[in-house]
Image (cartoon, rainbow, N blue to C red; front, side):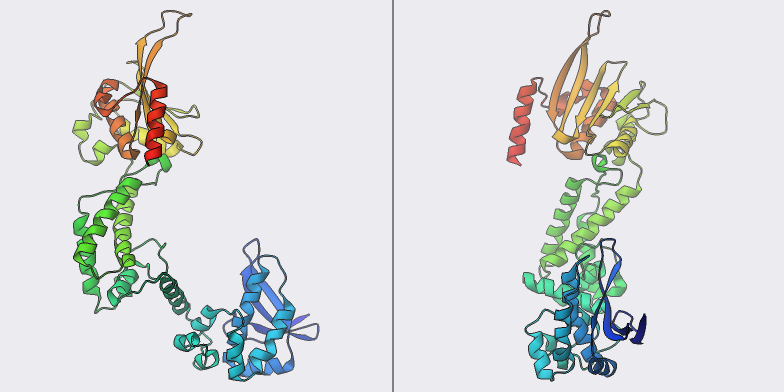
Length: 422
């Protein structure tokens, strides 16, 4: 039988319960293997309950001291109840000086105290009791996260100025640099917002006209890593030149914002080939091609493209790749059966083979003869160029996109040399 004896309005602060006639402190901390919150209990005395009822600061200090023991229990281990019980008298019944001395010897959860109003400067000086004089029952989790972020920066030796901080808050990356950036002007001190917007304008002007293409090799929503790196480097150089006072973290977050927005624009657009993306549909010949094409992957799945449809062959092919590409499906083929030629894309090897029919099979006992030539490819942009060229003019249109090697061994040596140089 379990009865709640004492609880605070914030249900996460440990409660006091009576279980089978025994007083216990009960707290939730961590999670089990199924990601459900774990609950821990350990015995206390009436004297401890009296302090917990009357002294919020001591109650929070005890919570902070016990939480590392809960963390040590992991997802399925038992709480070290003896260690928890050993903390009760020193935290709840000792003098402030003794409590301060205890906290200099044990592990404790600083973030819990900061979330509940602890004076950060006094905590840093080891005066935990004095730091908790203005403790609040209602937590401010944002305050704890900001402190944690600042401690991480201090460990790296990074010091933010007011403008650096404002830029990170504008992009939503002040607390966590892995957060997808976005524009949040309301998060910035109004006095600093004009300066933040000037930095953003510098970045936008630097990358105007640049774009980040799609990379169907990694799925329908993946974008071109090389395009991303090119845009990031352009923004980085412009912002550092125009605003040399900014720290690296602030400069990077501006580049991250520009690249993320460009990538989002690309993801929301239809899958098109590179010529269409550049607005040169007429030159690509997408609507003028007279013969159909066949697309296949390494799993034997085939898709036909016929002329006269609403989309170009290149767009349809890359849509096919985006749908089918996977770690175990990295070879795709485009074939013009009427002309007896095609190309095979080897995504795992950054290479492409063009195949042309030299001699048709004369009868049932005679196989056709093919010429196979290989070329190295530079990223998804290189693949897009080769696919577009083939769609426009077949294998002959690829002559200027070489060099092409007919010797497979020679090609393999070239591939190893490039891999070693990277």
